[in-house]
Image (tube, rainbow, N blue to C red; front, side, top):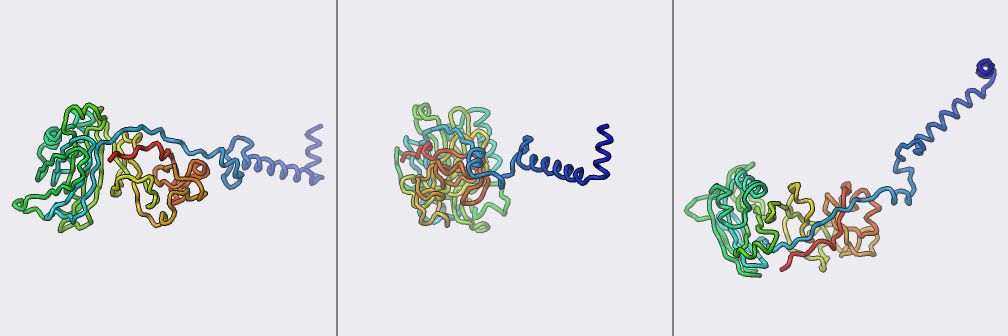
Amino acid sequence: MAAGFLVTLYEYSPLFYIGVVSLCFVITAAMVLGWFGFDVPVILRSYEETETIILTPERQMVQVTNPFTLVLGSGPACVIGGVSLRPCCLEPCILSCFWGCEVNALQGALQAHQHGPRLSTPKHFQEALHLKYKHYQVFHISRENREEHYTQLPADQGITDFGPLPRERYPLVAVLTMAEAEARRTYNIVASVTVIHVPDEKYNLSARILFQYLLTSQGNMYELKPLFMSADSGDMSGPRESDQPSEPNEEASSVEQSPVLEEENWAEGMGRDCVVCQNAEVNRVLLPCRHACVCNNCVSHFQHCPICRAFVLESFALTQIPAVEQ
């Protein structure tokens, strides 16, 4: 009887069609609004709902003391004329300069530190590099000595460039190590390795730091990378470094460099205020773009960096990053 009723309704009444259309509408609405577990499109969510659902994960940081600082000196730099370096260490240290160091030799030495004997003295580095460099020069640095030290390739070697790109040698690798054994036992970080580009006749890009690594007594390797923030954030200043674009080592994710001031167009005149609310102090760094531009309250409202529009995967508190002691 029920079947007969449905057949009669189908043949003589438009209510059947109305019911089918209504049922389809209800199912479609349920799928769109997430009644059956489907994700609700962001455009249909309210502001309050977005704030509670989209949370930027916070990275747990490890606080360490970096006893080494190395920046380029103020004078001109070139392969023929040399370059000035200005180290600053918390303890007496040794600055070793390896000119024309082979790329593979350096990478092999860094890997050897992680899986073999620790590289904590200039002799260890010489042995790990297997003498695959053009010239070696060493300077003894006293505690907190901020004088510039000039290093240069000997003229009798006749080296004016390191070949066309891609190159097999780094122009200059500067290594800082502790001069005293007791200091090496005191600090977790035992060496600083800085790869420096020095302009020559075939590649005249200005002198800059390409990579900077910290080696620990446990065999870990951390790459220092800059934070991008306002140029007039005076109370968050740190040692100025050049851009270091390569990716960090897997074990380097828990340590960040102290804030580095980068003069960006967006930063002019913004000071240390959050670029969103313009009220609170900047205290959050977004990853992976590394822009320090928002406060704790505003960081939870964004999936994309308000400066470069990069997708935000993580963030960490700027106040947890210790400044390098001078």
